[in-house]
Amino acid sequence: MPLRPKNVFCRQAAVKTTILLSVVFFFALFSGEASAQKRFSKNYPAGQNVRLRLMNRTGTVTVEGWNKAQITISAELEAPAANIVPQNLSGVIDINLLRDNQGREIGNVNFTIRVPFTSMVDIETRIGNLSVTNIRSALVRAHITSEGAITLTNIEATNVAADNTIGDIFFDGEIKEGGTYRFSSSKGNIALRIPFSASFKMVATAPSTRNISLGSFANSETNYLGDGRRVLGKFNGGSATITVTNQRGTIAFLGR
Amino acid sequence: MNCSDCKELIGALMDNELEQTRAADVREHLAFCPECAVVCEDLTSILDACKTGTSDIVPPNSKALWLRINNVIESDVKTAPAMPPPPAPRSWGVSVLRFSAAVLAIAVISSTVTYFALRNYVKPATDDLAARSSATQTTFEKVLSKIGLIDTPQQARERRLKEREAAIEYWNARVMTRCPQWDRVTREAFDRNLQVLDESVKDYTTILSQDPEDELSGEMLDAVMNDKMNLLRDFADL
Image (tube, rainbow over the protein chains, first blue to last red):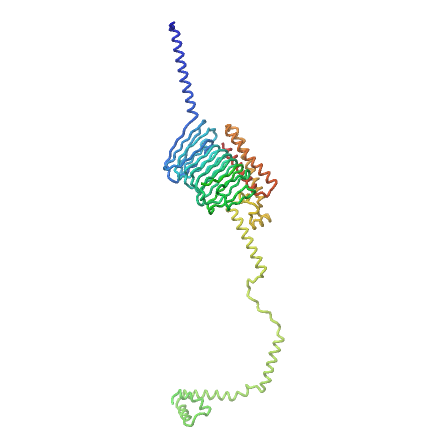
């Protein structure tokens, strides 16, 4: 039976309405995603002795050293999006989200920053993971006020400091002659992977677990104090100083 | 004969020791030389004076004279009062005891001044002393702590903890005013971390109540209190 013209018109109108609603719904959904996830990107020319100073609030921070005289900063901003106003002051790249967003709630900001591998790196966050890799300079500092993991790999720095409250800390790098290395956590596992030939003296304290594994570094020049809560050691002359404190977690030295 | 020959022979002429011919020559020269004649007259008058005055000078009894002189000297020596020695020039001579006391006083004063100067200069007192055990105290520090000039490690730790508690109380009040504005994730993270730190504080406090000499626990308690203060301070800014 042939359709009547009125029915055909109604059916076509329904199809058009459905397509229109679908398009509206799609754009609404897309625009919603766009507002929730913003991006930030900025580049700076840099010398070899640049210093990166970053203060994040929540989110992950990844810093990578590369063989270019350039700093690239990219960030993914979750809603509500934070203001990011980097400052370049006489060789210091300063990013401070607490300063730039005082009095307002902001979402996570996940940074990926590339710097010349000779740069000094000083990064900090209230909550979130920190990762630094391929840095050969005078300073690497990573501080998490509360919880988050810290991963420092391929580091050749004379001063290294990493501390958090809850979370693991992993360091894989060289121990420079006369350098200072401090690692501190309240609850987590601290693992240091360093060369067998490293010259350092060490104070490792794990008062709660008493779990301090020296691995291949265990030798006659180690002293256990306080019923095993603290270990003092001197290896290959003891040039550098390593201080490790873990209130309620384990400490492990891994030789390579 | 010349004048010099004449003057040399004048003495012998006075003593009649010259031959006749020689004496005649001297007298002839004296007759014609007024200078030599004056010398001869002077010498003659000296000899005459000696010959005439000898009887007045020589004592009649020389032995008796010497005895009298000797008696006078001996009597003077016996009766003379003992004279005080002349005053010595003022010197810095002091007794060994005084000298030792002065050296000791200087050493103590200079050591004390140096110690406090260094202590204030490097400012290790609050953190380091609180973390140090009595076993690692120097003898000088022990002496100072005995007499109350500096705190013992336990006293320093207690003082430090009181300061930390006051700071924690302040920052905790700040956090309480800010935390209602935090999102759920931040609030939960803060609570978790604070709980971990409080558990550590509780553990170390318990250990120290049983063994106040456990310096390692004291050091850890100090560190945890510091971490707690930093946590509160950092989150008070959020």
